[in-house]
Image 1 (cartoon, rainbow, N blue to C red):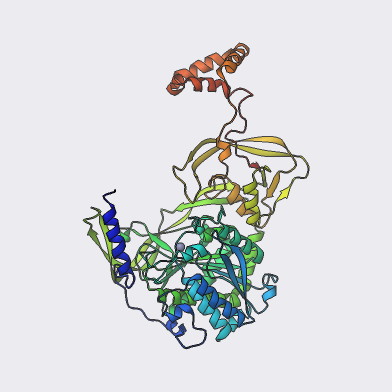
Image 2: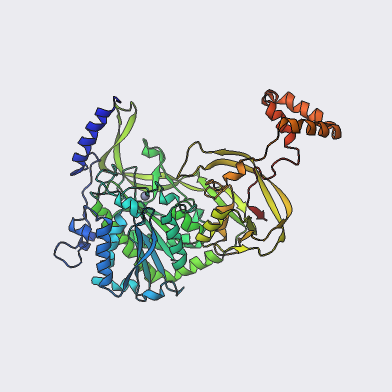
Length: 597
Ligand SMILES: [Zn+2]
């Protein structure tokens, strides 16, 4: 028996007992009050939500959430509950539709549509309980005007299986709710890394929903981990200086952020930017601002021209405060769509119609800082007897960092010329299926066609040494490319970039893009060579080659002289010749997707 066992038993009994009633291991909490507290209904009032019944200290399970929503939907002509998918464990996934014309959502391209998503990480469930309150106030209170000129889709829980992995001890760094769901799905997939590769059934259902309804604004609600600061509601998006969707990003920066910040401040909240400390032990070194790649909601929204806001409520603030802040943010977002939705629709159309010649695939941090007056919390650096290292202990006392350097990911790291098209061989079923899921238009050759294309071959590559999100990713790859005239057979699939989602196609099919199908390991077959030689067959063939091309002997001797590994490896010495024979596997290391420049 392991010597560790008694110790593990002791701690596993001790900790949950404490966690039932307190989070007193967390840093001290500044007192808070705000106008948004008036939003809370209490016991006895009609349509009080399950979370309000607990004073916004706990959050209902899936069944109780759906029970409340079903009753609310039944009570109002403005709401409809629709199943849009099934979780990995078989739970139905629901979206609430809210509109004055429920059957016409998405049929009128001039009418703005907001998609709000809660519980992609189900331990971070603030959006669900805020959304229930807002839907209640729209249908049973005095906020029906929010649907005057805009419609709403609300996903109460995207990761339903994670939501039901409920516990009081799921998230150590977070103040409530009392019972929290789990970050990943039943398949242990993190849905907010799954947008591009779309492996999870929950994500596949979500992409189908997005394509069906074509929302104009997408809000994805989370809770942070990490540093302490005064901000209770932080949010962000790919900024105009690093956005693929320049017009949508500009709308978010110029219209959305000022309006939402003002509403939050008015309601007593402290909105802040979505940033992370550069050095976790020295805040004065500054903060970094992130440009998301398409594995994340905000990066995916950017590359498919769906303006997307990532909300990260601050984990150290109490659940009640976070839910109220989320309510204010959602209400203001809907208000803004009523008032400024036309401008957003025009911005989206401009992005969908743009056909630039080049595209950035990734960004890196600028060495030139911007500066921000940052509302931080002071801290002490303490020495740990356990780790033997120092750690940051937050004091709970506000500290302003005037003109703190902020390093944005705004320097283009990788960039490509956008080709005319990508060509996918018919056997790449999962790639073709994923492209369809993303809403990318494909055309299939019904007869053979001659095309001038570039064939890429991996010249160097490296796989990760362990799986990430259930896939073995490529951590680096370089390619050579040759231009060829190919006669492509019927069944090959053409992905033109001259379409609204052309840049999404580039992000998925340009192999060096960070979230391309290639990077996510969709093409393992190209790294395996099949068909082999036997020495009794290759010996006479090499003899023939040397007889016909005497210069080969000299080249071989030179290679032997320069390469000790080659010298020492009999099989590799054969391989040196084998690679130059027509018998050699011509598909080995070839990227199966062809590029029409
Ligand atoms: Zn999250």
